[in-house]
Length: 229
Image 1 (spheres, helix red, strand yellow):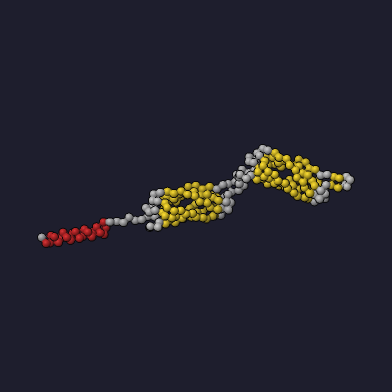
Image 2 (cartoon, helix red, strand yellow):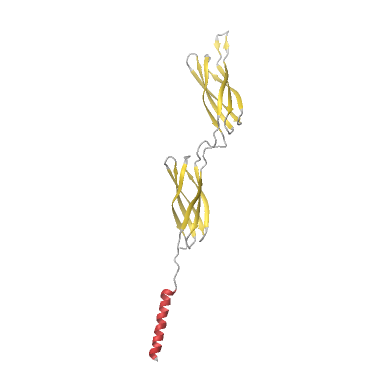
């Protein structure tokens, strides 16, 4: 009988040992995420303003009593908006050639010319009393304040962070690379806080590309932190 009790007690001790060693398993903590770019945008050049400039007439006075030409040549010109957007401002350059071969330069400016509209104006050019023999428009600049003439400095990157682990993400940091059409690359990073287990979080950031056209954006790396991990 004593031997029987001894065996029972031994069996119970062995069972308790098994429970203590392998009966309770602590779950493994996993800190992980899936981070993707959902969209990226960069504002490009808008429709460019267009115009034609035409010299309609020129005037220079000759004074018979003194046999001298006037100091100024008066240039009359017309500008027409032939584009699809308003011309908010313009600047036009003139060159006047005189009979002795000398050239004189000047410019004029104007504002607010609607689509399909024409504007007539004039400009005085100082030729120091020399006889002008020709006048030409050599260049002009057009400005529309609503639309950019080039690519914007910043690329907007929209991204999503999904917590795929079993612990909360208290802090994350994401590294981005933007490649431009000329092959240059620009690097930046963004960060955020508190993405719960099984949750997704969307945000955006901006990357400065110095006005170059971006052709691709990628996430190159990220860091995750759980302060209770």
